Image 1: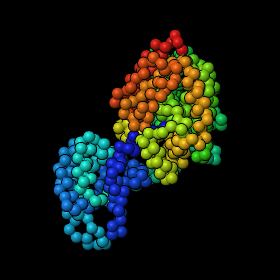
Image 2 (image 1 turned 90 degrees about the vertical axis):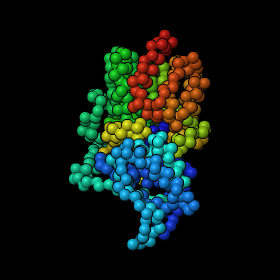
Image 3 (image 1 turned 45 degrees about the horizontal axis):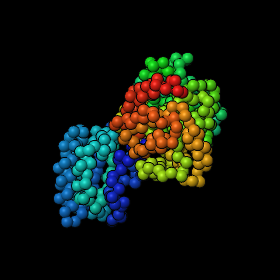
Image 4 (image 1 turned 30 degrees about the vertical axis):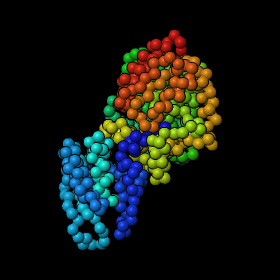
Length: 462
């Protein structure tokens, strides 16, 4: 509902820090604003980055606390291949007017190195000394970004197939690691919808639905074991994502629109006796599709998702994510690849999750989905989702939850399904140990075998 929140939460400083203070014409603070963090995430990650730190100590002990922090940070920097270029007292302001106690320049091999450090247990252990030391600071991220003509041209590399509807060029998806799947397309409601269709044509189908802000690439590790077990995998891209068409009008991206698109694809493929699996928005959309087309489905498996009506409280982590996503919406851009790779703690994913979006004109889908999660009783999706819940309370076919134990966005959401869905009673619900929000990336094979075992044990009751 969601995705990206874990990434955002991992790089923001603790909430107890001061929001900001204006001194001598400069704004000093202890944590970045959401807009600043968004700009930082947008920096290229293919060259070293130097952090310029202008520091102001608290009186009566601030410098001593910072000395403790400095002693602890050096082994961490050495481990990461980072280094202190310069650190010293700010003796005299020659030009302008400022009042800093210390200047420090620290070079990191990559932007991602700094992000990795910020979430490490070693850094978290010494960070309280920094908080106790500083009244505030100004940080500059300094990077030498090469001016390449091809990089400038890439910003407009895309195809507007009709006014306001974009289609990502095929070459953006060439040579992605571990993704040698044939694309398939259906026209649904005037949009070209992409899906993967892997495995035996006569195999029992499994509909695997991604969420925010990912695409079918998320399921690449699960497809092979599911195929080997004899199942046919149907893996769509939501409209606005992956290789599917991308309407730029934000008003197009309603909850109902996305439910209708997947329902239309389901009908076009005439899927029957189908197992549904959904994560994140894949669950929000898919549970509506399943409950409105019950005759086509034999069982349900969900992970790290929910079915909110706007009447229940949302987790603090989701509310933080929605606030940050609102800032991105206002800025008109979202660094999709960085969000997913940071959340999954796998830097090599950035290219694959940026591939569907040549520039910000293509990103209306990921920008809008966080904003249309039902969070208030007046939400337009409230009644439809309440009907879906009523259908689930009468669902006697097999229903399984397989949530990750490290997802702050949906943590605990599995319990309601286990309690209220009749088909969930007595099932081998599982918690994937060590799995965060995008568990298909980190625990894909394990999750595939959970689905395989569940289908094999419920063939007679489905």
